[in-house]
Image (cartoon, rainbow, N blue to C red; front, side, top):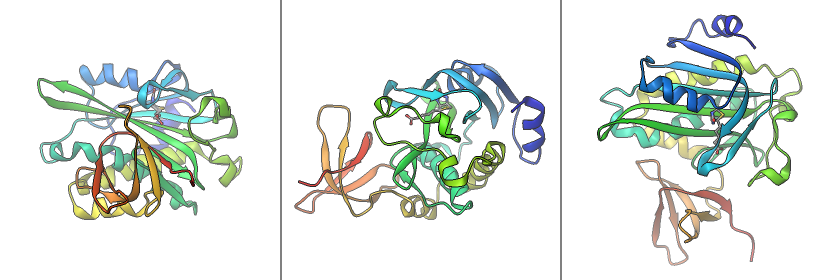
Length: 259
Ligand code: BTN
């Protein structure tokens, strides 16, 4: 991967500037700094290796050289997108899932930000924002994908079973083409972010729908219930044993162990 090759592969997409690094601490950290200065909409930071990649909930994200996709896309939301910013993580996850489904794979979204293949995590998304007063000025959508087997962290470092695209697509898997398709997907989905059909498409690929799940909300109060779908802001709809509805805005979903 290098800057010239990337520019060629992505030349047909209406992106802003592209900054490629052989190695960087974190593309999201770099993109956040750029977003607070002069980055235009759809600028891209991408690296072959991250030495301090970041995941949600202060977790580390593993990006060894030559084996993964790690990139951050800067969005300057337009006025009509601002009411729907909580849907952006879903938009990115859908674009990743679609890029895998067009390759014949059964991809699902583990709410809110993981993409699964056959029940194992192949991609994670970290959306961060830059505020100006009480308005979000910029969003940074960070996407990490395990392309080759070498990108999959050892089991003791992961909270959820992980896999790589190589295991499903073979060693010839082309990360630049996958990058292209995800970016094209984000650009194509963006005008639909405020529609009901966007939520329906997101719900269709939600993992564990109709199943009993356990969610750690990070406040010491785990929630259990049947996963029904999404609310209009992208939060999760569950129902408890009595059929009461529960809304979860934050957390990590797991299948509830059989009791
Ligand atoms: C998660 O699953 O917790 C989210 C992982 C997000 C990782 C990506 S890799 C590119 C971008 N840069 C980072 O430091 N993190 C995101």
